Image: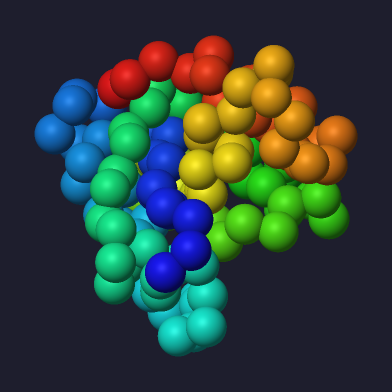
Length: 131
């Protein structure tokens, strides 16, 4: 199966804890139509299913994550969800990404052969708090 995978969800901090879970489930649903059976997403969904839900800040912070994850450095499967205009005026509520252990378990004192961009992301990931 390879390296263990986890889904990391970044939820809008204005949402309740239960809503963080629901909005992350929307992201997972969106991702299921984005990625095929050869993807890390499919591997995670079939073999791991661990979800870590983090406080992602406000809508601006989540939009910044969407832009960041959309950059060329990012090779990880990811997605996001925003509500419709009738519900929350189209507000983004959750961003999610599938990460291997080499990222979420990164230790500065041990060289995992990460790219410089991955090291920055791994270090920043540790700054987010649980939702």
